Image (cartoon, rainbow, N blue to C red):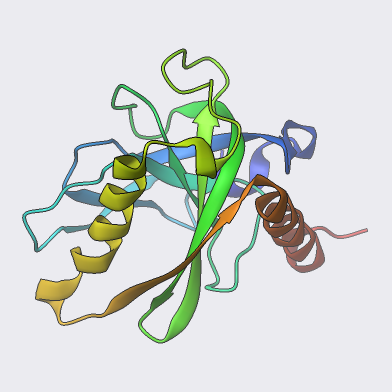
Length: 177
């Protein structure tokens, strides 16, 4: 099974979706699901002393402008196992420039996470959570000689539109009528 393509589309909606975790919160290992096989592969160990501030993965059956599925950070009090599937809802997203191209990171919360599911919009988060996320993305590629710039933070309503667009782009590229 290739989780990017084979998950039933009825399980993915802009306001309620399954996220596939690639990287556990607290890890320095940069894993990615291999596009051809659907298996998890190690892309690299982070060069900096930073670690992922949240569980990181993607939303299946989406296609972002960078040619990959739409990225998602899943806010959770515990690290989640890579390749686990988590039912989430979005609370916002962050736009950034990665190596000259726009990159979007959806921020989501698991429905069944009692420490986080009180948040409905990114504006409700404690400021330090966002500061950690912005700092991480600002520095995690520096020792590789790459520059990443955090641009804007958007709320829930804008994020639903971003996810819907990525779902439509996926359908246009991969779903045959």
